[in-house]
Image (cartoon, rainbow, N blue to C red; front, side, top):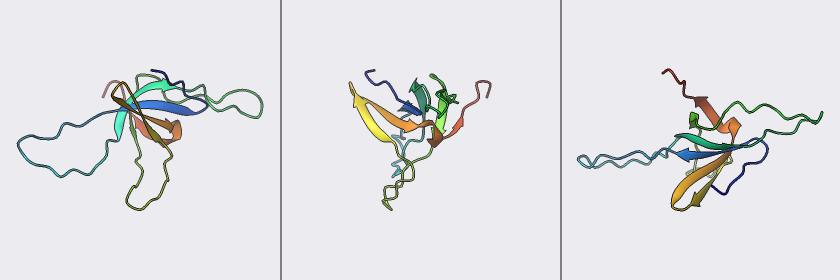
Length: 103
């Protein structure tokens, strides 16, 4: 990957759901789960230190989604594609939860 996230940004490879080939589904939901593939160093604090990043590479996460219908941009992430693979670049604060390893 050619991306190196800055500050509090993370790069996520979204999971792509496989739709049924037996039942025709009109699914307008966007993917909202994925795996973290890169993590920035954290925001720089006024004292010169950096905040700790609460997510790490390899973590499976669920994140919020943007509402395309209303034009609201509550979540500010963007799509990035490299070699046919789709990625999302977002702030760690857009992460709703991290999947537990023992779940």
